[in-house]
Length: 61
Image 1 (cartoon, rainbow, N blue to C red):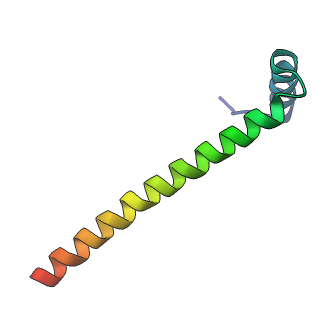
Image 2 (image 1 turned 90 degrees about the vertical axis):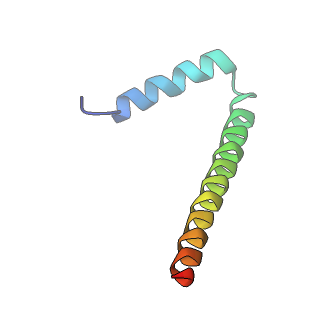
């Protein structure tokens, strides 16, 4: 299981182009990017909250 190689990425790109068309692909990419950005910010917020809780517990000791 070597992973995804360059040829596989080309095939995936061609299939996506055939399914969605050239006008829809940039919109899908933009939507995927914004979704990924929101997820990253949400998970960062959760990690920051956990760090704050640990600091409060340490200060209470």
